[in-house]
Length: 403
Image 1 (cartoon, rainbow, N blue to C red):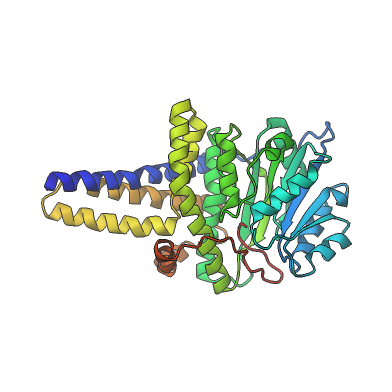
Image 2 (image 1 turned 180 degrees about the vertical axis):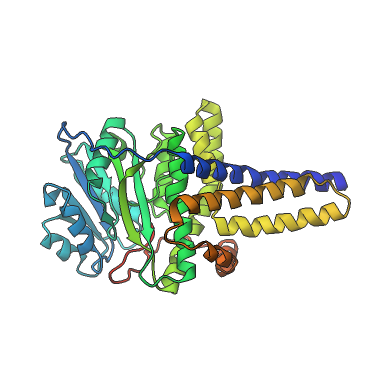
């Protein structure tokens, strides 16, 4: 019995330690990575690209997005807005800016993936060289479009921008901790992967694709985390996404607690389901093909949302302490302790590099309350899992996290 307990706890500890080491490696690589060169893209080829904007009832925010786009795109008609099952003035506002607007009405097929597929099929009559996808609630840093288009064309791979979420003017401690989590996920981790020449996951807005790649991509679905799934599908097809930190896209974290809770529920339920299905596929394909990029993506996808990781780690740590006190091996306890230290160092190093100016160190002491806030979300995944795509409610003068 003691041998079986040791074996079980050691296996469990390794399942927690390996993703923790992946996270630590990514964050440390990001900390020591040289700054991205501020080099203007070579547009001598006069690239033909379109910006595809999926929009479902985005009248509150789409004008701000179009204002941002029109400072960087030569012709407003090269912005293609997919007014997807809209019941507001989204289409009229977009047309007033001179954008090309196509309307889709299929209430039984909801989701960003369906809207993207509709937009790509529209572009087939006159295909561009590059398609850039931008959510309807985002703004672009100067030059971002040109950088994305040039990178996608030159590398012939999907390109993910640096997609960040700014904290609202009156941010609560919970919002600031959420902002740090997004910094780690969307900046530190892909920066660390890129520093080692490895691909990243697609994180949502600000994605660029060569036409031949996006045309064949499986887009039409109601997947809760359609962008991540798209990146996995393309990687398995031989086109792993690459991170481009020189192109920055920003949104705004939601200010209303219910909006934030609904968004997190959708995203984390979708992520966990994609993790359970995607990691075995990536590992199998990576080992069969001897492909390091697929194995790296399997490691990246295996990292649980940090709140859930900490909750389960605490349970495993408690079990290993109890078993050790009853005479079992100290190895599981050592492995769980090492996993905890690895995650702590990863978070602190990422905070020091990217979040120190906006997020006080003392605020991290309130992280346990943030984790408690998310416990019902994880129970819901087991007993009342969200399976249908639901758009995050927009807040005036602000945007929201991916999707």
